[in-house]
Length: 412
Image 1 (cartoon, rainbow, N blue to C red):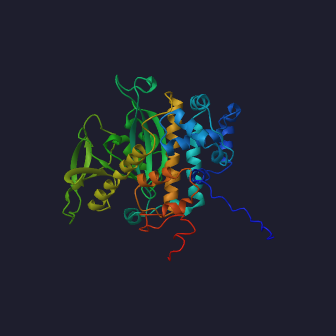
Image 2: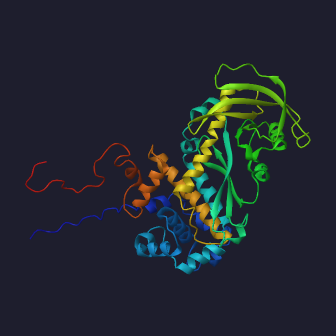
Image 3: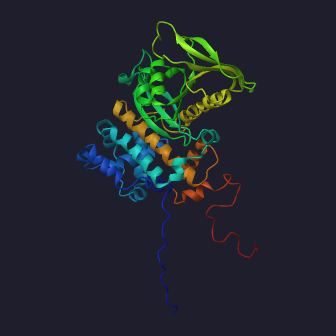
């Protein structure tokens, strides 16, 4: 009788969701739970299970609390492999979103982003765009976006009779296209009221790009005193007097290059030095438009100033990615704490997916990356191989095909 040979158990490939969650350090969520007092209230539904449930809600585009609870309950066995996470009940998840401090989600986002950038310096350096290499300095883009809410249910965020919304203020790095400062506020507040808070961390020699919504001459003078350069659009309400002309540029796009000072009783004394005003033709949505830029740098060429402001539209693409791809249209709760939990976890998912795209040299759109990983969320597939599969690299072979690809009796 032939003796049976014992086989060593093969190592099981973790699911795609587990590989994404494991990018978060194991010590981090319990540490933040103790810091914000979440662990004292987490008897049956731990803080880590709460974070995993909200990550799953973003990655699966869950529309309600029942979608999350039912989906995680059906996958309770692979979910338990995620550091012992457990599926929540509807009441437990709703109560956690309402009661647990959303500052924990904000801190978790910044800690994970900092951990990935420290552990992988090349990820922190980013793709090094040609313009960033040319200027050899840190370039920051500042803007805000309005996230609409249901006015009939969210009375705390009403900013007029029929609309409710929350505003996300962001400072984005042009080199990495990742946030380096962000906070949430009421949609009633004007961007000018928050511009000093957003730009507080800028250092000498860095560059700020902003639109007309952040035009505040008193703040621009403070940036000039700190040695920070800025490029913005000129507001029509502010009047300037021409006091000189810059050397004529050979670039046919440049129409005017002037030195100006602000005049008028409303801005008198806000900016005592002269500024540089550049008028250029710029393509906007395929059409050539005449735009007027304002800066405090007198050494750059006029064409470089126009190119810098064109880079400001990168933050518009960033907001478009997160609002059209992640779950920021349907919210799981109506109170302010639940809404902020969902927004910060959505930004965390964006960072995790961007990191996976960087590891796999993903050259396609973020929406395609999100769709591919969402489809394979519970599959035991390696994320790196998954992102190099199929039309992504022009290779149409099967990912994990059967050992015998041909029928018996037929030659290969």
